Every structure is written in C-alpha cells, then in structure tokens.
Image (cartoon, rainbow over the protein chains, first blue to last red):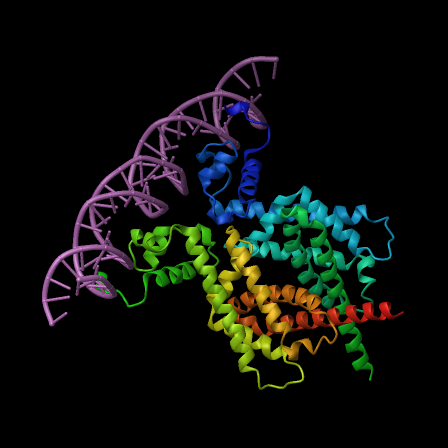
Length: 210
Length: 210
DNA sequence: TGTACATCAGTGAACGCGCGTTCACTGATGTAC
DNA sequence: TGTACATCAGTGAACGCGCGTTCACTGATGTAC
C-alpha cells in the first residue's frame, strides 16, 4: 500500500482529516487519534510519525486555519482594490461571507474552537482576529470612514466586529435559506459599530475642545 | 451505601457533575457517562435511572444554565431598582460581571457550548440571550437611552451586545489580574453600540422627514 | 396500626469494543563515495 | 554510473485499559386495605 497513496504528504492529510472531522461542530479535543488516522487513510501508528499527540496536531490545525483566513482577507482586499465605491464595507462583507461558503472548514472550526478546550487554539484565533483587524485598519477605504479616530480605538472596535462577523459567517454558511437576512443583519451590526465609534470619538473631541 | 448519600437527588448531582467537568473548557460532548457518574459519586448504571443518554443530560444542563442566568439578570435589575443614576449601564455591567465571578460555571459552560456540538445547547443559549435582551429593552432606564428606537432594532443590537458581554464575562472570570481592563473595554463596547444604534436611527429619521 | 406490595434509586459484575500506544518490520528515497 | 547505507513514512499485531450498556439484585419509601 505504501506507494499507492496519493502523493500528498501524510502530515497534510492528517491535518485535513482533523478539519473534516471537526467540521460539523465536533469539538477538536473529542477526536481520537485512530479516528483521525482512519479518516486520513492511514494506520494509527502513522500518526506518531508526524505528531507527538493530539495537541500538537491541534497546533498545526490552528496554523492552517490562520493562514487560510489571513490569505482570504488579503485576496478580498486585492480583489476589491479597483472598486472605488463610496462605501466598501458591504462589498468586503459579501466577499468574506461568500469565501466562507466556499471554504467553510476554517470558519466553522475556528469559531467552534474560539471557546474550546485547547488554550493554543483560543490564543491562535485571537491573534488571527487581531491581525485581520489591524490589516483592515490600514485600508484607507475603511479608516477614511472613521476620520481622526486613533488606530488603537479603531482596532478595538474592529476586533470585536471581526469576532462577530466570524460567528455570523458560520450562520451564513450553515443556513443557506436565510443568507440574505443574515447578510443584512451583519451589515446593520457593522453600521452600528462604525457609527458608534464615530459618534463617541466626535463627542470626546468636542468635550476636549471646550 | 444507598442511604448514606447526601440528601440531594441523584439527578441534580449528575447535572452539577457535568457542569463541574465542563467547567474548564471541556467540551460537553467529550464527557463520558462513567466519568460524570464518578464525579457525582454514583455508579455508572445509576446514570440511566435519570437520563437516557448524554444528550438528554445536556438538555437538563442547558435548562439549568438558562434558569441561573435569567434569575441572575432579574436579581440584578431588582437590586438596582432604586439606583437612579444618570446612566445605569456601568452598574448593570459591573453587577453582571461580579455575578459571573461568583457563579462562573453557567457562564463559562454556556459560552463554551455557544458553538458546541449539541444543537439543543446552541439553541437554548440563543434563546436565553434573546430573553435577556427583550427583558433589558423593557427597562425604561435602558430604553430611555435610545429614545424613539423601535423595539425590534433595539433587541437586535442588545442581542449582539449580550453575546459579546457573555464572552467578555468569561475573560473577566478567568483572568482576575485584568478585570479592570476587561470591564473598561466592555463598557466601551457597550457605549459604542448604544451610540451607533442612536446615531443610525437619528440619521434614518432625518432622511425620512426630508 | 399492620401488612402486603409496587416503585424507585441505587449496587457490582459482566459483556464486547475501540482506544492510545509500542513494537519490530518494510520498502522507497536520498546521499556518500 | 553503481553500490552501500541511512533515513523516512508507512505497516500489522499486540498490550492493557476504560468505555457504554445490560443484568439481576437490594433496600428504602410510599400506598392500599
């Protein structure tokens, strides 16, 4: 059997097997090593050629999710670079949700493990959300909507927003018949948070100048 | 041994054992029946006297969490009934976070299972957040901050906010050394969302009257 | 007040099963000379 | 270009263990008469 395996590396196949199994809300730490190996088309001992234990596979999985999600955001930004809409937010949101439909695994698994048992997974996800938020802040089409707002305040709001959008993306993926409603709601939340950040900053500035 | 057990009912002890075991981020569906019974000080077969399987215990657990959380909110509102502060939000938030510190299990387990594997748990939590949001909407000290805002819009914003506050309460509980910072951040998020809901509604009203 | 009986919530023993992990082994691939 | 060898990624068999579940049984409690 050894040489009849697809040319993909066993390590990668184990990572993808774990993503497949976690996909429908299975908690990552409830997966079995034999089960993952089976899903990957490998024998159980082969697992130990690549990972020490379940937690170290978990680390690899979260790295993979992180890379996927950040790459997706970069692609979305590049793809919309030429769109000079008055408001880029609906475009970015729509593209992100559509990407989630095409690539549901990192989204669903990421959201499920945001409060999961593996500390590393939680930290990794938090870091990813922060990276994305900072990335978005630097886009003038976004920061232009919040003129004068210090980057720190902007990042804080965008991090909370990113987390909420991640969770809403899961709903979007999982309930196709309500996608329009979920998109509209997500857009309203985005609008509320931007408007709020703007209004509070304006108020502070006003108070400070009096 | 039968009669030497504490007078508490076995059913309740199983529910509390499950909460104890889920407490530190263990996914509920990764718990074992033997393990839960052991934690409850019962033999494994005793589990089946009270529950058909793990999922039906899960239902009982989510009911318990729901009752705890809603009771907490009611108590907080009653306790603050006489406080006629200009802004009741910091008081409510502080009291909610403090309650979470005293009663961490329903908060931590509830947040962990918000995206867990048991459909019933996710729905139960969603329902709880909605109940609380509607409850808060009806408090004039809150709705007075958003004059003229239709209840539906208010509920939508408050639901999102409630979910975020639940997640932040977990951080508050788990990282005691950063509680002040987390509280401040939570309060800023509350401020942003209220200000945003207010600003957007004002904008809509203005547009409609032109 | 007794007594017979049903019900309820617990028990320990036993079952077969899949698990994590280790072991010795295999065959392909890369590398030194 | 060969050849010897190390390394790497896989295998099946085997281990002991804890799991979910069922079973017959027990003793306390409530109830009908």
